[in-house]
Figure (spheres, each protein chain N blue to C red):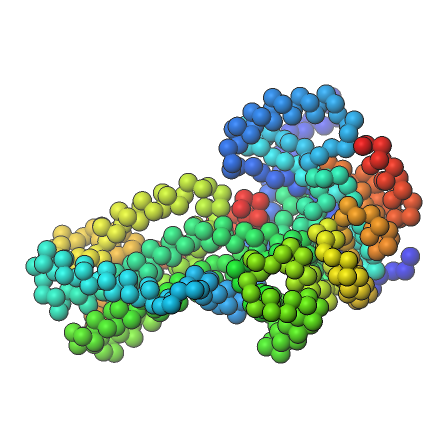
Length: 274
Length: 286
């Protein structure tokens, strides 16, 4: 392995744990339900199935506060040049880990250190305002990135060509189909060249023509990006795009290794689970 | 047993160090949030402007609705209260028009907007890393645009009654700057508190209703006829006075200025501590 230079991007995570506090939405009734039903079931039939969701923890000093342990003691070191696939059952913590890498969730325990500008495609609407038109959203994104007028014009042209929304570009995003909103979101996020690209699984949607186009565009940006981390249930994408696989379960990393060997094991386990 | 005689003491000490370090980190990160937020001032202006544009999209008169409704309110209140208080309309209406706009469209509007400052932006907060301070700035920009539309009402009243503050009016500029800083502080404070405790907005609303009556807004301080010693105890009074009096051609006393700065300082301090504490958890609460 070659030694990384000082300016290369990296993501370093040490003993990171993340709990979601649940304060709202009737924590009492939720607590009752969880205690009576799920609590017993889960403890008795532990680990027969892939676990859905993180552990539900009750705080000792405040019995009214429920914590959901979304990530548990994560240790990771991702270096420049790596393309990482995050896999795991629903609610295994993939998206939460991605959001933590993006800096949206700040961990209460442990450390996360990143170098390099990050772009995260976490949500089809990715911070877009649905009431504004596609063009206005592009403009806002440009402002958010601190672009000059010239750069915003360039961004607008680039995204317009990619998304092929024609006259819909000037209509509110609210009336877009999910595919159209995704084209816009994908086009926008891939128009800039981040050093670290984080992709949540939604980008697998969209029609087949778009898929090819998206794959091409993603290929380009992956070439320039130093780190790519993606989560998906669509495993062929992992096989073609990633070399490293991280397997999460109930907020813990249970396996971390090359895609070639690990993916088959993962598929086997998943099939056995059904 | 016996190998570590005071295990609890050791862990307690470690915890304290850890905690101290964390709070230092919290303040540094809070400060960075504000610095990065200030750098994105152009974004905040666009966001605030688009908020207003969206609110009135499809409306013929657009944001001028605000001006019209303010004019109607000030006109009818002016007629009723000048009769009730037995005051000359020429003296009373300029005062009322300015007071009501400052209260209804600035103070009260910012305080209720501040409660939803972060809650409203939950989509953005969950999908993109952006300084929280931008949301506070955006709220201020939005309210400034609203004020710019409504200020027409007192201006027209001033013109009709030939009221002109003269050079003293310039004293309102530092007052406006203080209001801007206080407004941002209120956004950070109430925005953080309301994200965590959803009972705060109704509490704030009922307090503001009481404040409206005990603060000289529709009545003038001089009407208390010497029984006005308690006025400076109300933080809203000096703050309103430093902005309103110069615009009506008067000079606020030094004491009023001192009160205004004192209350603002306390507000900023409290807002800073609450915001620095809440900021890392905001994404989870919203």
